[in-house]
Image (cartoon, rainbow, N blue to C red; front, side, top):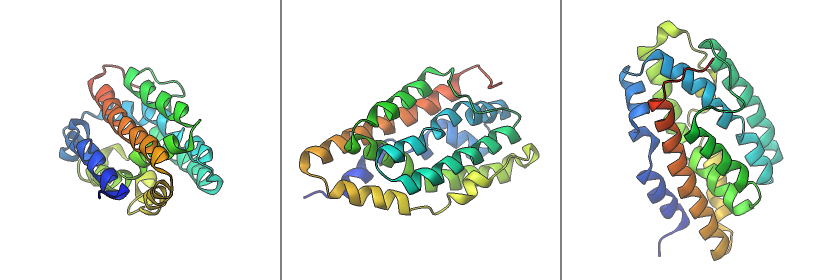
Amino acid sequence: MTTVSEKVKSIIEQWSLLKHPFYQAWSAGELPADKLKTYAGEYGSFIGLIAEAWDAGKYPEIAGIERDHAKIWEGFANSLGTTVQKSTSIRQVAALNKHFKQSCSSKAAILGALLAFEYQQPTTVASKLTGLRTHYANLKADETYFEIHLNDWDEPALLIKDIERMDTKDQAEALFSLESACMLLWSALSGIYDCDTVAA
């Protein structure tokens, strides 16, 4: 029998953000600086929802930490000469944000959505941090957000454990939300990568 953890890993591997052209270009130093600026501003609208999602999942302590992390992300955006957009102008990012907001009405759905992000974050921040230091040092980006999430596996482990405790119906809902969020995270990067808008 396939375990919840195995199902989670299989779903996320299909939509691994490290395979996305946006992050691959970042890692190779081929991502234009204006795309980093757009990413910091527009994707920041999603980062600002993470605390709300943890609150909906009934984890107030983690939600409090995530509010501080959202402020740290604002520092990253500011260091690149932009600000976090409260209402994104990129359709795919707006769809991601909508999924997280709608998922807050169900504990199973929000845990699945959070897992799509939290499970990948330790590896994506490591890649982004290396890319910033290797190829974009001249931008003098504030790297704090990425540094504090290196090897941060406690939250995904907690989410998986709580999903494992659910009944079959709720597990199915969580996994469906996980896959939906994985696809939307991928799509959000595509929207940022392909857009011509630079965050103000």
